[in-house]
Length: 107
Length: 162
Image 1: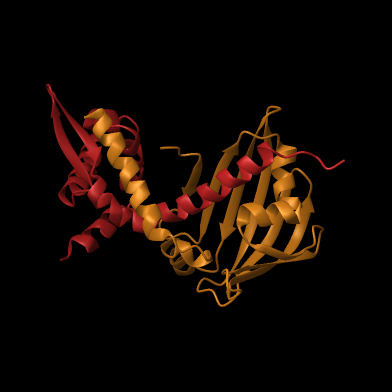
Image 2: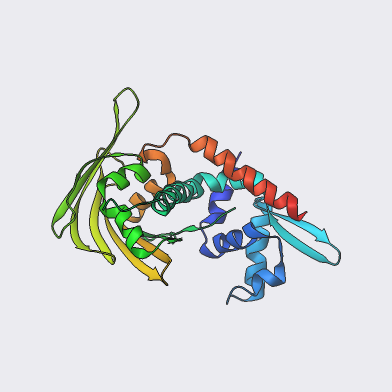
């Protein structure tokens, strides 16, 4: 079982993390993903193949296009790294926002 | 899934940036940091001390229902500028990631919205990563439940698009 290590290697790269964040919201083609980066297209392709190899991304045929989308199962490994930290702060800030929306000055 | 709170943590760096936009005027956002009772509510901790002034300080303590202390944190407030910024240290007592420096910036975004930027600087990149990997060392122990919730949300999103 060295899958786990591969996942962490995959997310050690800032561009690959950015790609995961991009496709987290919706599935995208390689071209659409590459358009978001200044990096050369072949470099982005390389990143996509690494992310696909370690199963963080899944390819899906959609007509003539291939869409990349996030693999939720594998996202668990990534989630262990930074998502709970973000979620923790998001929960706290949601609470803050709720409390302050109902805030009535005492005087 | 809402992505209101964002975390930027570049590999190999010893800092991280937490940003969040609120549907609150900046004065109300700042009040949530200034008023001890309100801090206690949203942080889910007891506020034993909160001296909001230059060269002030704070102490937070969280206990379980039986009264056992789960977490105690403290820090020095270096700078306190109402509705603009708080510069402080943060130390989780007996925590694994040392003392951090926190630069909190409060910005108005029109009359009804505001933005909080929290720049957290650790002593080393390794200590920062420890903190990122142990998100629930702050005393929250529902990591697993939340993780499942997160993953469930991701699944829903993907199915909707399929």
